[in-house]
Image 1 (spheres, rainbow, N blue to C red):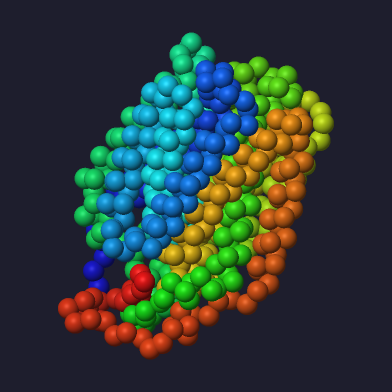
Image 2 (cartoon, rainbow, N blue to C red; image 1 turned 120 degrees about the vertical axis):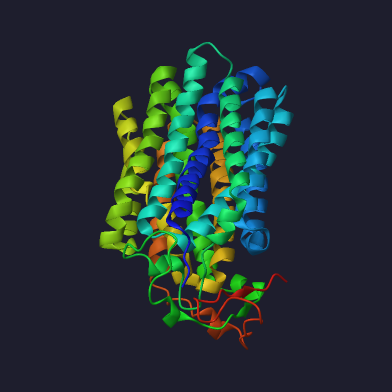
Length: 448
């Protein structure tokens, strides 16, 4: 059985880490930059909802389509093109003369980011175990933590907020070039899924990244044709999708409005508040590094439950009136507790919906995450503008409790049946396709 050479595997893993860093960078900029953007354009606080909504439309569109077209386009080409689009959009941010142009650029940024996010998550869910899956998302947290530092540094140096976006645009362009140079390597290393499970499920014990297990031949199954309707009718697909909405709503709302809470609500200086926002995103990074190992040893179910409770506790600390230090502690607790939730929910998608549905389900989940990242924080912006920024903590508590309830409900539902039981008859592998003696055969996804 042939495997991907060690050196390409290492290089692709490094690129995946860097891609998650770059994916997080723009998300960390807006919360710190928005007060300056609002002043330059003469718009109210709640106008951030226009930027978030436009980004969500692009993000949702591209992430859902990526789940359906990944097999046709190839992950390498998808990542290269989407990262280039994100770089162009961020360049547009730095040159925007008015809010309308900024909103249009947010739409383009959403299109690029959604495809990168969905494509990488689908790839990683089939190629990496819990440790690397958490670490990949940890580097997203690192990117979001660096974002506020870049913007705070630019503002503290007397530069306009546009410089922060310009710096990140250059970083995205460099990464797009790297993806373009490795398109063929991504194709050779693409993970295979089988009706018995994903490559992820088979490498949880610590097998080498990207390498099929020794007993892969025992898991061969005929390719099956899975209609889109079969995926959309699975309750597990939609309960998982809603869970992503709630989780990302908490993560993004805390990061987006923390700067305003600390400066206007708790009397913290802008420079210190920017550092505290970075500490929040940094706790997400540290949590994923640490809990990537913990999840492998204790299991995803236990880690998820403890993490969800921790998010609720952190939100309660933010909601309690008191000194700024208490709110900062709550932010750090929320970030550390939230760390493994997104990667573990993604990693276990195939277990809930079946391997043949996994790419589509992940695309829907990532798209729904975009909704949670925009509509809920935007709604909170309206609520804050009409009440007080102090309402942020209470809103986070409500969202965290709702996520706990949804997760427990989903955990008690029966596991989804294998795809082979949902559709019939199986379609034999075509002549000239993958050697039946060399490894598992991937399901044929019906794009109708």
